[in-house]
Image (cartoon, rainbow, N blue to C red; front, top):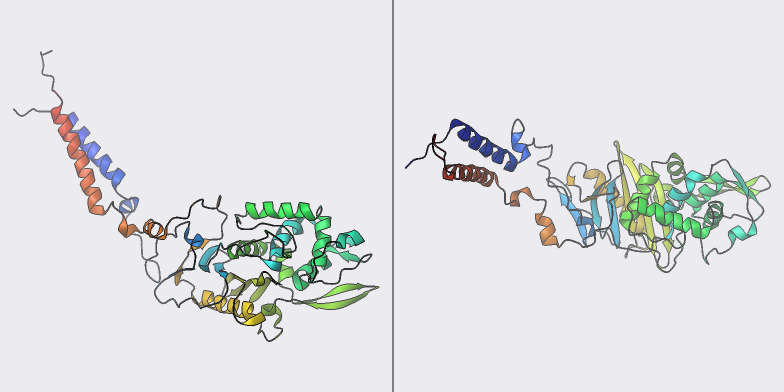
Length: 389
C-alpha cells in the first residue's frame, strides 16, 4: 500500500536535501562565475605545506617561463621577498650552522632600540675584557669617549667585537644580552638560533640558520637606524684627540673590494667569517620596486669571494623570477617549530586540489544520497490517520 504524506513533510525533506548540498559543495561553487580567475602567468599552485622548508635539499616551485635556480655550493641558503616575506627558493633552510658575525643582526635588533644614538660613553677597561682571540676589531680604546652611533658603525662596517662588548655592557651585560637575544629570536619565530656569544664568535652550541638570519635581516630593514648603518659604505671612527680614521664596510658586495664588483641596488646588511662557520652573509637589494633578502652560509667552493658571488647569482635569479615562482614558505613568525616533519609523499598530496576525494560529482551524488535517505526515513514513519490511536 502506498502511504501518503503531507506537503509539510515534502517541503522539509526538500530543505534537508538543499542543506546537504550546500554543506558539501565547495564555497567556490557558490561564487558568481564559478572557478577563480586565472592570474597572470597561469594558475596559481596550492599553498606550500608548512613543513616544506624543513625538508633537506633545494625547495622551489617554478611556474611557466621561470629559469632554474643557480647551482651554488653553500651548505644552506634562502631567497625571499623582503616586503611580503615569501620565500622564493631555499636549500636546507633550517639547517643549524655557526652564524659567525651575521648573528650581529640579531644583536642589533635586540640592543639598538634601547640606546639613543647621540649618547656619549667613556669606555672602561673591564668593558673590553673577554674579546675572543683573532676577533675583528674597530679600535675601541679604554678611556676614550664615543657616541653610541660611532660604536654601531664599528659593529656594522668593521664587525668590531670590541664595539659589541661595550654596547652589550651598556645593555645590561654580556649574559643578559645573550638571554635577551634568545628571547628576541623566539619572538620572531626564529627557532633554529641558540645564542651563546652575542658577537657571533664561535662558541660551543651557538648556531643559527639561513631561514632565521633572513628573518633577522628582513625585520632589521624596518628599523631606520639599522637600515642606515647596514647600508653605510664608509665612515670615520674616532681615534682620540679630535683625530679620526676611515673605516670601510667589509661586505664586499656593498664596498666592492678585493675583486668583488659592487651589486647594483644592494642595501647591505651583514657578512661574517670564522674558521668554524666559514663565510656567511645576509644581504638585501632593491630593484624595480622589489626588495629581496638573501642568506648564504658556508660555501664549499670558490674561496673567500664565493659567498658574495653566490649571493649575487641568487639575487639575480630572484629578480628575474618575479611572478614566475610560487612561494615555498614564509619568513613570518610561526607559533612553533613543527614537532614532526611530514613525509614528502604525504605532504605533497595535502595541498593539491586535484587529488581531493571530494570531487564535484561526488559532492552532488553525496548530497542526492543524503536527500534520498531522508525521504526513505520519512516514508517509513507510521502515519497517524484521523480517528485512530
